[in-house]
Image 1: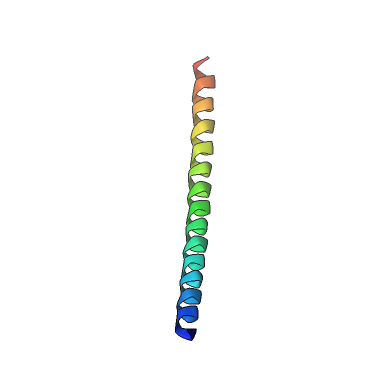
Image 2: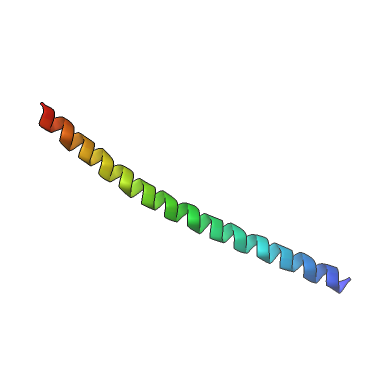
Length: 52
């Protein structure tokens, strides 16, 4: 019975670790794409104002 409980606990810990890693990756990707998207939008606005 103890082996089943240990296996279940290990599974839960692995799943928690995987979720934490996935959340960190998502946050990092969102930060990278958000900052470049903001820079691109600023460059586009600058270019459009020079056309006027």
